[in-house]
Amino acid sequence: MVTTHRIVLAERPQGAVTPANFRAEDAALPPIGDGQFLVGANYLSLDPYMRGRMDDRKSYAAPTPVGGVMEGEIIGTVLESRHPGFSVGERVAGRLGWQTHAISDGTGLVKLDDRFKPITTAVGVLGMPGLTAYSGLLTLGKPQPGETVVVAAATGPVGSLVGQIARLYGARAVGIAGGAEKCAYAKQELGFDAVVDHRSPTFADDLAAACPDGIDINFELVGGAVWQAVLPLLNNFARVPVCGLIAQYNGSSGEQVDHLPAAMRIILSRSIMMRGFIVGEFWDQRPKFLDEVSQWISEGKIRFREDIVEGLDNAPAAFMGLLEGRNFGKLVVKID
Image (cartoon, rainbow, N blue to C red; front, side, top):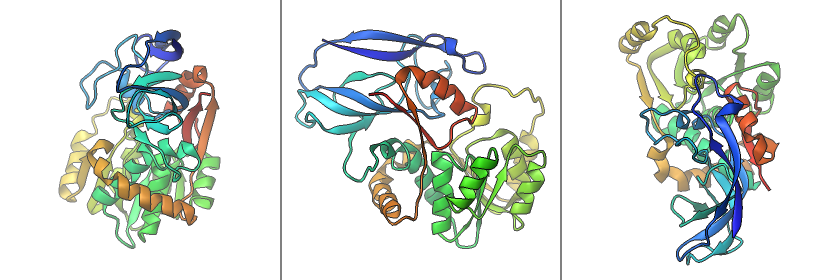
């Protein structure tokens, strides 16, 4: 009998996530049955969407129950199998949660081939975040040569790829990041045309100066004050793919101003297309995405950065840091 070490939701957050919201525990797994296999987790991906799963509210996916294993995608190795489609030793990725071992029937799991170098790219630049950037920008943003594309969280796994793909399509990429080190990385390593520090007291003016011809595409990941600085700069017929609002995930920022009427007026008067999306809508694009982005990586046209944390028990602290912007690159927990 195999024992899994896991992190469960101890209680729902009231505002910001705290250590009290998590509990580590061990649990015995039953023997695998026909059509099942045992996976040993090697890496766990930490992503902002997990914050929404901690709340008991209506959303596009069911919340994690109190006492349930925290939602998350892992990279793992098949350790034992009674499934004809999965063999011992194969590497897989899928949402098996914050735990060291899990039993699966293969639903929702994908096999990993030699395009994933290092293997952690399967949950980063070649995984869900990468597909989010690729499909959202190209399907909804539709960048054209000479246009200005703005993206916040520019050194994260989604924002960094948005900016680099925008430049491959001939657009001008303007990144928004927090702090001098991240801004320098986005400019010097990722090749953004301009980068603005959202921590600057003159952030809104700095963004306007970096976008002298306005903004044609804003890939929205953050919301909050960053969105308020972007909104006045949007051009007629601008496109705004929305896949994240991380500034609002922990609840109210304390500001009570209702910005919606002013935002709707600008959206209407400038014929702006604003479209929320969940990456699963574009799952059919995954084969083309993998072929193109893996090729761009091999040619040196796409660069990426990973932030590796050691040990499953450190996942809660790392996740809380993610929500505060303390990670630098794709945040991954090394489990084994």
